[in-house]
Image (cartoon, rainbow, N blue to C red):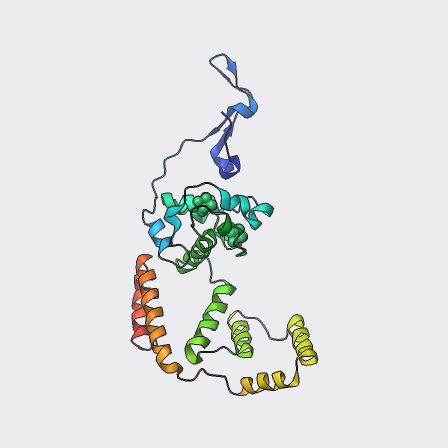
Length: 259
Ligand code: SF4
Ligand code: SF4
């Protein structure tokens, strides 16, 4: 019997014999390709719960493996190795080690949401991809991605003042990702802004650089938001079994210095 989705089988697990006769029947070549028998012992039985505890992963249990997400996927069209349906399957059966073999391509999701519109079960595969990327970073399987660093800087500014100021946002993001501010595209963008934006807007932007804008009466909202975010982080880390980070989140919530 031919092997369906042979691309999903690791080459080292395939065996093909050029010449093979079984019970008098010549099954050489294509018909003699077999999958190596193996026993998997390292299941993570909590993997589905771990992914479901992260934003975007909540509905992973609804998946019935129809494949519509992979069929519609923008990235899969150019790289067949990028397969959301397959990764959702691995999560649901707890095959963490197998999932980690694709850790360097999972983050390539471009968030186009074509999978989300194609999914008949409202799994929100795009959200699952985000949860997977987040899980890889939280568990230390991949380094913190630039987009995660950007989210952190953005969130810190909103938490602090209830507003963002683009100049500080870019400056902090570049600093934390080790990038210099003197980049050609950035200089060109600044030039064009100066050339095309109305003077009143440029003045407002300049003043915002001197004194960061704040939302009035933000302090009370900030306290409530901070408490909520810390609760969520502590819950997620506890679900992921990251005990020391739970302690860190508690210390954050209590306003205790890490030093
Ligand atoms: S959101 Fe990601 S997983 Fe979904 S179709 Fe787009 S690239 Fe593929
Ligand atoms: S489209 Fe939805 S139900 Fe179908 S395999 Fe993808 S996530 Fe699962």
